Image 1 (cartoon, rainbow over the protein chains, first blue to last red):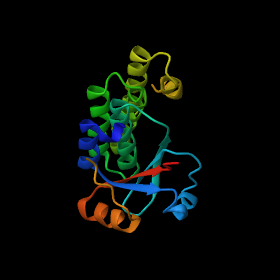
Image 2 (image 1 turned 90 degrees about the horizontal axis):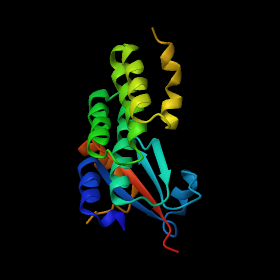
Image 3 (image 1 turned 90 degrees about the vertical axis):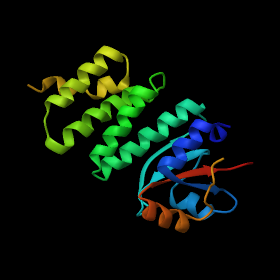
Image 4 (image 1 turned 180 degrees about the horizontal axis):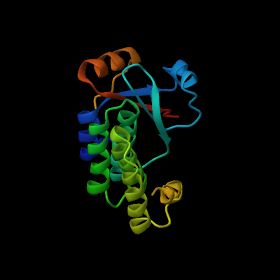
Length: 149
Length: 30
């Protein structure tokens, strides 16, 4: 079980308050959050707002990368750009071999763009995706940034 | 070992106090 891996334990305890929701005990929470498949992981903010979710089983390293990435996306939504940036960079640098990296590069550009609205950083993000992950769907999603002058 | 909270209210309160996010693991052991 990936949750018992020391690397996962460290990421979870450093960044999150973990809550396990068992089907037989918390049917109401399954209904409230429209959970139809398990395992499903949700990231909530302190107001209980649902920011990100994913389902299925991941290896320990993939799970670390995914929860840091989703936590960073939640921080981005909350306007905590510096923290989000730090976490996206961590995914890109420390979890280089994981599936989360192209998405982290995409959002790294977004996190750099939002504070000052400098469109150049979006184009740089696209160029990096094209160079490092030409076949990724995240490269496709960033394609319109090529129109930026 | 991860010390999972069992209550959403406690988890949200702790998250506010510690400036953290809540990670919910929806799990069905059957």
